[in-house]
Image (cartoon, rainbow, N blue to C red; front, side, top):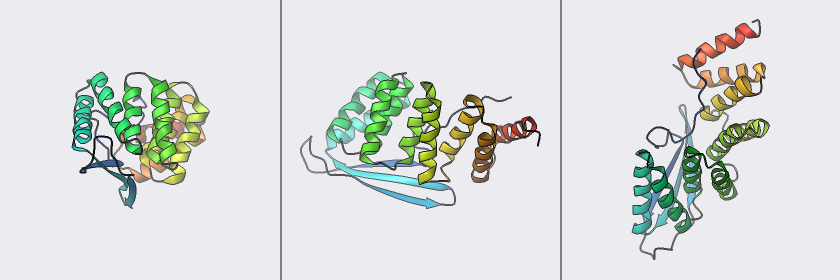
Length: 212
């Protein structure tokens, strides 16, 4: 039986998996000057993309790019330090707080991870990516019902958000022993994402366990 693995937005190379994008445009301003970002959501047959834009100084943009390189390379301490500086310089950009929260989660600092993700939700209260990442933090810290609520919040915003759909199915399957919930969400995920052989195996296993 293959291992159930959660989907987080930033993965092996710390790049967006077609769900969230951040554009930091350079402005002619002081190092502390920022403009409030605008988030734009688009959706097609493959899912959705959230693009958040902000104008920042060239120095802040350079720090952001360096932070992403360090995180891609697994140099989390250096990446986190730079990314924390960037969030201070551009505090109204929800995506930055999500990135920082995910980075803290990678090093097991779930308290700071949770604070960062919740800051993103203060800025963007219906941000499905933030809810997905918060659900993972709750799951990793043993708060399974809160994790379920967080995944469901993400799916309330975007029902086809396959990352949260798969994570909710795994939560119900492995941690809550709610087989009906697990099967429903694995099947919904499978309807959206084709070619995931692991999920096909899990669906068959659940049907067998449910006597279907």
